[in-house]
Length: 198
Image (tube, rainbow, N blue to C red; front, side, top):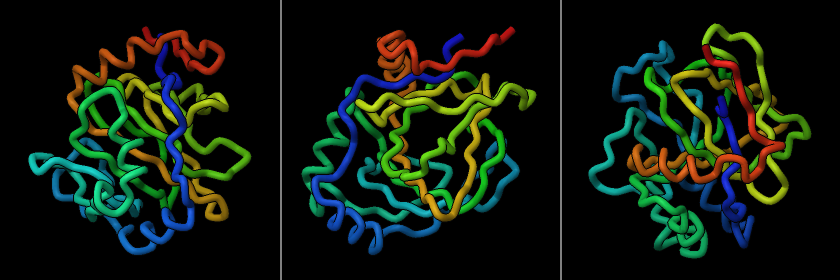
């Protein structure tokens, strides 16, 4: 079963990194967990902000809001070109190790962009539910977007302080995300990750 695959989308990257880091410095802050989840972690070891969100979005973690439509329209256009209407687009940086876990107890496709990470070794990896058979994320040079099948496998991330990692998380209608991801199977067959889920 395919549990992780690149998405055939243009790389998400700023046209001006100095501008990007200025925004990050001014808006990034620790997230506040406001709902109970299946995970035991009560304080998210993440900092970040939302670059876009609709008023009705009701997340587990609350983040600062940086209105990219106003402060960085070219990046906003890149984000909004995602082929599913968004509820929220959230930039996050890990500040600690993430052991294998699931975000949901049901199968669903989760979409991410590996926006910034200069580590020559991949940090993001998967395991089976019993935390065996670790396999590391593998992305082609042409995209930093991918999706993984949460709920039937676990995901995790190594932490190396000298190599900070910022990802973009997409929140949208789950049925529409699932349908989009299913159109991406076997576009990058050498970069897909599979597990025998029985």
